[in-house]
Structures are given as structure tokens and as C-alpha cells.
Image (cartoon, rainbow, N blue to C red; front, side, top):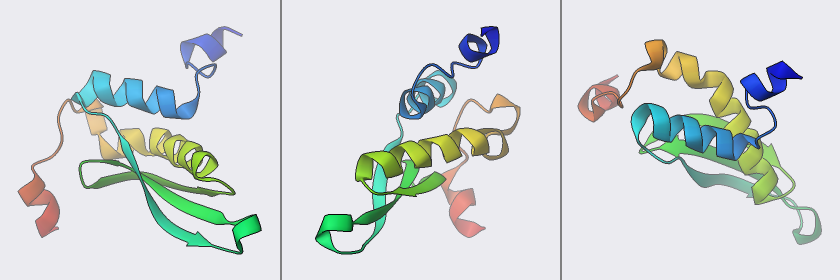
Length: 99
């Protein structure tokens, strides 16, 4: 039980990602639909979680909300690789676009 509270697992992934992003880099993630497929009654969505133009994580699901939650979960998993040493600001956009 302490691990649940320590790692904030009782908070939904979108809220955890938003809190982490605001705390560490002062930004709020946004979600963009990358792809939609399937018939209207059984649509599937692929969504990306972004800060500025940087993709943090991608997820899919049977609704945009479900896909956003999956994208946020993946962004949380990827966070340390994207922002090593708890980097407190976004990398220089010019450097990002040249790589």
C-alpha cells in the first residue's frame, strides 16, 4: 500500500503526467490524434502525448480517452530517458530539429 501512494499509482496517468511535467519543466502535456481506423461503431485511435513538439509517449485504444491514458502511461515510462537527471527545461528546439 505505501508504494501505491509513494509512486502516486492511485492518480490516473494523465494527471500524474501533467503534475510531473508542470513540476519538472513548467509545461502541460497535450494530446494529438495520430491515427483513427475501423468502422464508426468500433473505432480505434492512436494518440501521442506531447510537450511542445516533443513526443513523450504514444498509445492506442477504443476511444480517444483510452488512447490518451495509454499515451500518458507510456510517457511516464519514457520520462527518465527523455529528461535525464530530472532535467528542468526542454532541450533547445534548434538542437532537437537538427538531430
